[in-house]
Amino acid sequence: MNEREILAYLERDRVLRIDMIEAIKRGRAKVLYAESDAVLLKTRGWLMLLCCDTVEAGVRALAARDPESGAVVAHSEAARDAVKEVLPAFTHASPCWQAYYPKTEPIPMPDVCEVRPFKKEDIPFLLEHYHTVASPEYFEERIDKNELFAGYRDGSLCAFIGFHDDGSSGMLEVLPKYRRLGIGSALEIYILNEALRRGWTPYGQIFVGNEPSRKLQQSLGMIVSDGEIYWMHPEREETD
Image (cartoon, one colour):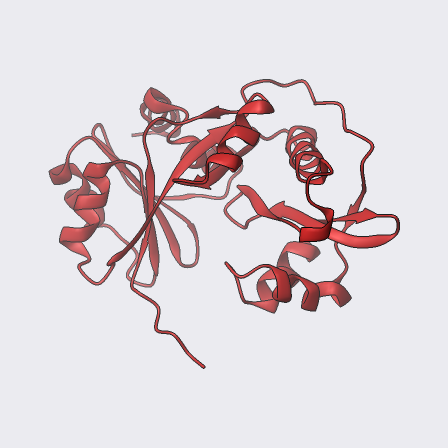
C-alpha cells in the first residue's frame, strides 16, 4: 500500500485513528506493515501504533514489529487482543479516548493567564507536579523543540501544557490554588491554536473515566471517540 492508500484505510475511523493519520502527515511515522486490513507504524524509538480489522490481521502486522519498541498503542479491541497474543509481556493496557478538533479556525484566547515557552530551569517544577513522565531529558527535548508551554498568573508559574513527542497535546496541569479560574481551558485553547498555526490537526487523548477532561474537550468543539485505544507495555516495577 502507498501512503494515499494507507491514509484512506485509516480515515475509515478518523477520530479513533487520528494519531496515526497525523503521524504520517507530519512525517513522524515509519510504516512497518500496511495491508488492506491492518497498519503498523513506528512513531519514535519505543512506540508502535497498530490498527487492524481482526485479531488475525493484527498478529500478521506484528510479525513486522520493531523488537526494540517498548510500547504499542492498539486502536481497537482486536488490536489489543493481537498484542496480547504476540507480546504476552505487554500486560499493562491503559484505555483512552481520542479527541480531535475538526475545524481550521482558531478559538479566541481568554485573558485569564499569560502563556510563554517553558524554561529549562523550571523543569524541577514539572517533575514535582507531573507524574506520568519522570524524565528530565524528555522535558528538555520538548523545550528544545518549542513544544512545551507555561501558564503564568500574576507573574507566578501556575500551569503547563505541551505536545508529546508523538504529536498529541497533553501534559496539562494546573496547580490546585489556581483551579476553577479558567486557566486549564485557556491552555487547552492555546495548544489547540498552536497546532493549527503549525498546520496540524489538533488532537489528544483522555484516560477513560476522566469525565471532566472529556467534557472540557467537547466544550472546545473537539470530537471524542466512542471507541477506545489502549496504551500497552510491560508492567513497570516500582523503585524506591
